[in-house]
Length: 244
Image (tube, rainbow, N blue to C red; front, side, top):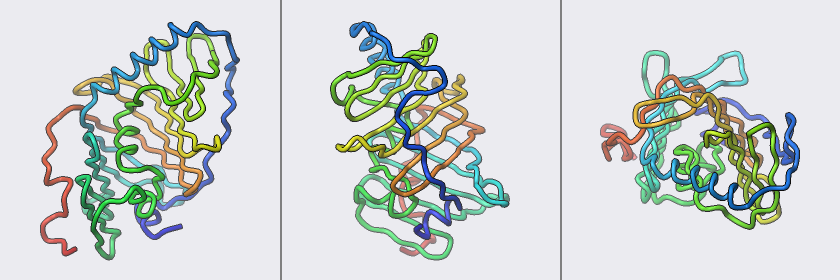
C-alpha cells in the first residue's frame, strides 16, 4: 500500500469483483432499440455535466471514522482531491491541470508531468485522469463493445458488453458503472445512490468506488454538490507558498 493512499483515506479493502447481477436481477430478452435509447439518454445527461464541486465525508475502515474530502473535476482532465482536518487545514492535496500535477501527502510535496498512472500511484485510484473525470461527472460515453446481455429487476436494467457494465433505473439515473480489462476482469466499479436535485442538475448523495488492483474501496457520502459552476483554474495548480 503506497503512502499517498494511507495519507488520503487510511483504508484498504478488497473490492468486490463479482460480475453476476444479484438482488433479484434476471437475464431477459431485450428490445435493442429501447435499450440503446435509454443508454443514449444516460450519455446525454452525463454530457450536460461539465464541472462538479463536491464535499463530503470519506468513510474509513478504522477507529478514526472518516475524513472531510473536497473534490473538484472539470472536463477533460482537471482534478482536485483535498482532505482536511476538522479545523479546515489541508491534510493531503492532489491537483492537476491535465499536463502538470502537484501532490502533498502531509509531509512532503511532489510534482511533474501527468501520467496515466498518476492517481493510482498517489491515491490508489486505478483511473487515468480523464477516466476519473468521467466517473465523477457520471458521464459514460458511447457504449464500448457489443451489447451482449440485459438483466432486469422490476424496471431497473443492467447492460453488459465486453468492456463495461451499466446498471440504471427507469428514470435514467445510473446506479452502477463497471469497467473491465481485455481479459474480462474488473478494473474499477463505481456505485451511485441517493440521486437528488442539486444546483445545476441531479447528482447522487452516496458514491462507492472500488479498485481491485490497488485494493481500495472508498465510500463517500456527500453533504454538498454543485454542478456546472465556473471553477478557478488556480484551484488545479500548485498552491502559492508550497514549494515543489
